[in-house]
Length: 476
Image 1 (cartoon, rainbow, N blue to C red):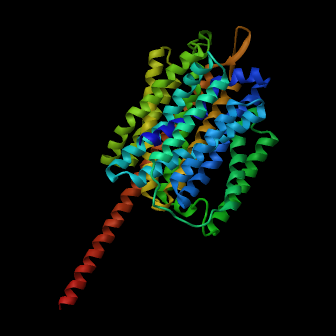
Image 2 (image 1 turned 180 degrees about the horizontal axis):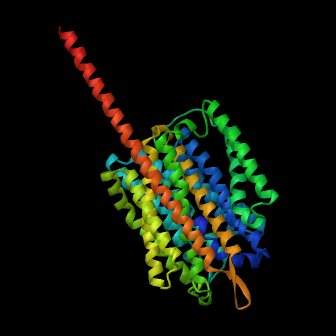
Image 3 (image 1 turned 90 degrees about the vertical axis):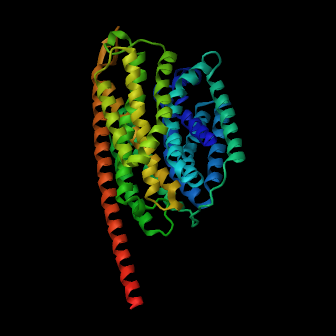
């Protein structure tokens, strides 16, 4: 548990640690703001593409082995970033760091295989919460390291941390005996990579390119075409990269759809709150605090997820994971509504972040449990990886919508255009609506589970009657 959760925190750190470093990196490497933003986009794309592949390979050849390979890639990427001399080398480094995103679903699947049944929910919940913990502490931690030293020092620290986690995994994490075997679908991997890159580029860059521009529409069209062909291939091949038939099971399908919406509902606070904290008070919504203070204010959100994850496991064991998902989505909805009101007190804002962290903790702990309960034991890693991918699509969609609204609605402060409150309010209301729909999907999951349970009970009852009749006939 300790080692795997450490891996989860380390991987999630890699996605946010570069955020406060972008201005310094831009100055040092003479980059424009658009070029520097690719250091975030490339990491996201690499994680989205590699997570499903890592999950499938983990099911095939062993989850611990693939976990170690992913950590080795992250270590290599961190080392390359520490010695980077150009934008190209740093971009490759960020892609290698992002390629390790599959560590999270792999770790959850290992816990499912190795822990006693009564500890699986708590382990899954804690492992899931590490995504929020790492994301919350990444920015202030990077600022603390980079301020007295340089951005290279942050990558040296990431190299040391990644290497330590790799050694701990090799030393303490057992290899799962559950393997599916089969052949790796290379064609399916290339098809999924091409489709996801086109889709996520359209989502993440649409606000810069223009939503009605030729590049954006072309990327969306290419994504739709490639993923349609890819889906047909997955349904025909004997050993698919993603088992779409399993993914189409009602509970799995509804949970995955809810995952996209939860990603939207959760990420609004992660994305917009630091901007609110750093914005000038003249905007009417800002607090005018430094970057480091803004990062510190985000820490309670990550810690809240870690604290409430064990409690969410208890709720799932008593009421079912679907109840936990529905409760968490409703709490996220309430938190986003509070954020949409733009609280004027820093204490109130931090309290609302804590509320959002509780909702996210409940949702993130419930979704892997629902997925793993309804897929074959030899497909847990690939199923969790697909779920993690859909969460990435949700957060990317939220980032795209928020970026579009902030750019569209501005006001003049000190002679410079800055985002107005309208963009923040619209993004939070959309996040609240997405969370509410996710709660409705969780309610639909509950209905499916009840109907399935009743059907199974009826079948068992009929089987029992048949057994009695056979016994009577035999006795006669």
